[in-house]
Image 1 (spheres, rainbow, N blue to C red):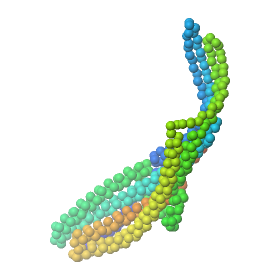
Image 2 (image 1 turned 180 degrees about the horizontal axis):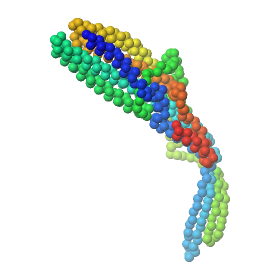
Image 3 (image 1 turned 90 degrees about the vertical axis):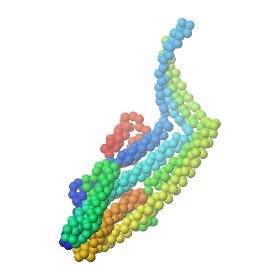
Image 4 (image 1 turned 120 degrees about the vertical axis):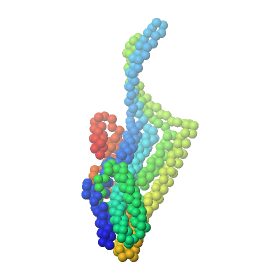
Length: 458
């Protein structure tokens, strides 16, 4: 039947048209999606602010070693035995820690290591944001192609229904064949509605990941460069993954915290100076200057200091165990991503063979149906087998692409810098360099203002 042959031609051509039509209007590449995700991520902004707060902890620790200067102004009135007097006083005082057996310096080191750990956490978040963009991009692409396949299915089955009605009119088929075509058409329309709903959901996920809806989706890019073996990938992950590097920094912080807890039992030497002036309505003006040294040490704290030391030791053990567990989990993630890539590759090869065979079978069944050797149900089943295989390939290609970038993420390489996206990136050291010495004067603050303006531009 010529009409059946024409429908077969539509099946092949319409699917290709559905894939190629999307890039026509303001199509976006995967690189565009990654750039948009990096620039518009509120999660990245949140964690950048967290890093800047950690930078300020260094400034706070540095400030603990500096003098504290304060002034006090007071006035008092006194009446005794009909004698009244008024006193006005002004005092300027300074106090500084001269020696605390290294506690303050340990605090500075803890703050610095915490900054480095938070920087690694920011890299982890960057990887999460970019991987979410990959998933969103492939999700929209797969959903769009599935809509095209389902639209084509509706067209083809509608053609089959018209053919069944024509053949029923001349007595070539029964009413059952027509009913089968009608039922399959209703199912195809339901599938089309479901795929359109999935596309709408995928577009929403894309907007969350990148900040805007996609105007169109280009084809998937070539596979990124990957290591030659699983062992090489695992070694790279153990060396570069930000979660492992963050855990290493946290172990250092915990070890320093043990030293700080032990140092809390040692004395503290402080110096103080004050200048005061007062004016009494009876005795007149007076000025005074005082200098002092004081050393304090806690002899008994009710068990607080020993408990704090034991807590620090337990926290160090916890951080060490967390590092070992993180290393093990990262190794597992690399292996799983590697396996997913191999599985996706095998699926794509097998589905290609399935599509080729299903296409031959579909064409054959159509021709046999025109000769009366096949029923309408046989034709519809063959058509459904072909469409299902094409849909499976779409999903397999999407899974393959996600697996590729998941492996990069598991290795710690899914960053804007490693992907060479060619855009300015956030400099985590800029704010730290501006505040690490706890600037106070406007001259020192100028560099900080420049950094804040640059952050605003990013």
